[in-house]
Image (cartoon, one colour):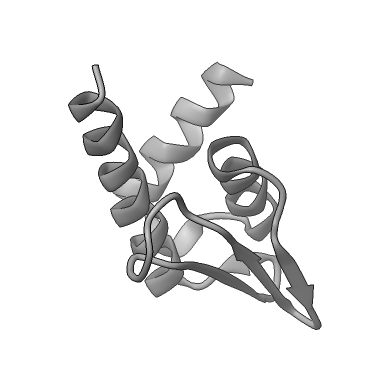
Length: 87
């Protein structure tokens, strides 16, 4: 799965409008744990910090919305920074 995670993140960074919703949910589940809430078409993930960037995914066909992909990337960058500070 680690290779798949890297591949999904690269796709998110290069083609944010072409990311499958299922891939975005799978990636967030690996990085942030199980969704804290699923309501209708929304899947919400808890992050280890209060406030933005929040992870609230909503499907659009079989693709994730591009602005939500940008939020995921911001959260990944912040998560990396937090991990780096705790080393």
